[in-house]
Image (cartoon, rainbow, N blue to C red; front, top):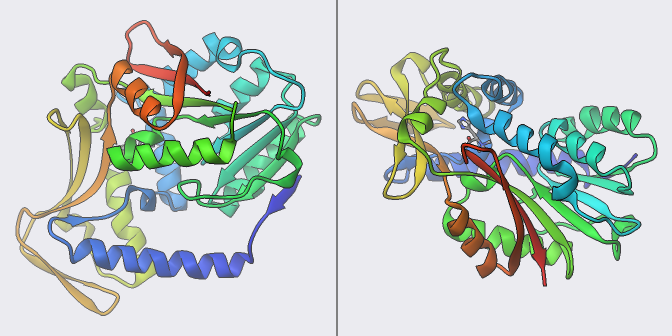
Length: 321
Ligand code: AVJ
């Protein structure tokens, strides 16, 4: 197994500086905001794993069902030497379903910012698929990155599951899809998981689970800021809020200050009014037509779309032509 990395220490230092700058910028903006990518420290990733198993949280289970049922059709015909490039990995559960459905795949290229993922999960996957070339890339998949030289010029299939694309603003989704087209190259394909608009009660329940795991996931970003940036957020003084904003077709998550209070963050004072919120996440929900239009504007043709019978979730097979 090969790993392409810059000096891990330089990467850590840059990541810390960027986190600090983003948090200060977000908490001094109005309305206050934090980037959803900061949920995923070790504790946050573990909480997200728990979310994926909650009865109310349908996306993971539904997407897995689609991949299991239609995996072979989603992957389609594979030319010899085809490599699967996954944008942001987290867990290998989904890609394993595709690898099983397409045993002729030559290489798997997980692109992830987390060295932890690239170490542990990718090694285990390599052990389970000894004939597959696993070529990990440590990079932020939302930016431009280089593919490993071993797969350049090979037929490429991109994979971006989980409706992570829902975290992007419409202009960011457009930019991401364009960049992916450039990275994957002409005549590549792209498999994208996209959560769909549905009954608001189903959407609201998925982000307000009875067990309170999503609330802990949301609040955990404050714990992370306390620990990594030397802040003193009182977790009991903030509450989880999540609701579907139908005008913008997105679930919004916020952390609401329950009192008027001052918080210290990296030697700065951040004041909160009682009831003021920090906007922590958007999770956009698409219709099938809307997503096809977004993909088309970015240079992708919809070759096929796979959904579950209730049309809760969709997997789009896109091609570049
Ligand atoms: C990982 C972005 C797909 O939006 O459903 C789950 C994150 N946030 N519960 C989503 C999330 C709250 C999740 N994505």
